[in-house]
Length: 365
Image (cartoon, rainbow, N blue to C red; front, side, top):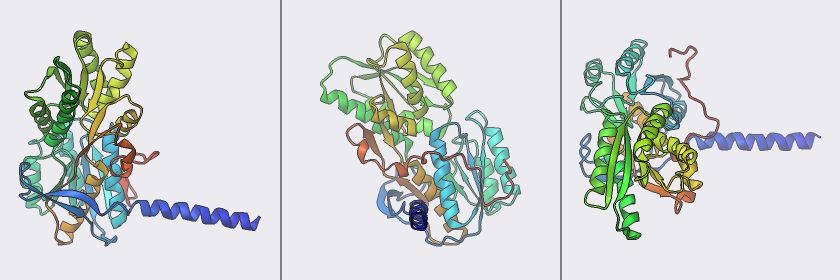
């Protein structure tokens, strides 16, 4: 009996140690560093990113998201919270509830800073809407890291994000290549759902996708903008299908769009004819590519973007050298390569729940 208990103890200890190591074995990770920071068209240099090894930086970090209604932002939450734990710092996460709530995001960031934040990591609701606030924070020597979405002001301290223009372009190029290889002569009709109008990443993704399909036999017959909530995207998809179902070949759009389209097309009996492509990856999109329900999606290693944002901020606050503009290398996942995909770079693990605080006794949400 004692031997069995001892073996169980060893097994538990091994699993625990393995899980702890999993939080710190994400690096080195292949990324691109912009040669001219904050200029999205700049040339880039590829490096293997390695964060600081010091795990005892007692910092108070404020994190602000547009929302946390989908698994994409849950993955960012996972990457940020795990890296903050690794550094032994403190985190307070605020989420504004949607892309219509810019004023609330500004209010939340101000509140977080008033509570004593040393620095801010922000996924911005608006490309321009936080510029005045970020200028205020710069004057107070509070660094701001732009994560995922993009901000136009150069008063930020660093960016941890990819080019969503390139994400959109990769989705478009994948479609163009597919139809070139299959030698389709007829025009291919697309319904395009780029996301919430006015968000920086949406403007960029829209440009990239449209540029990629220009001059091909792919045609966007309808474009619909909207918040990346399931209810909003489902409503938009249904409205489009009510009018254009007979002529469509593809639904292309956000991860939430793709997730919603799988269920809607199946319910309408259109899943055999109309195909789906996402222009960023979520856990549901990942699963549906495996199952053959979604054709493809670029991946931007969301968890890694969150981790790098934390490392950038810790470096700045500790007067260490840092890369001002970093983004993981992009590639497209489909049925041919998804088995080789490293899930830890993009998806929060099963069972992970939204983490609003790290090393805080009281939630300020």
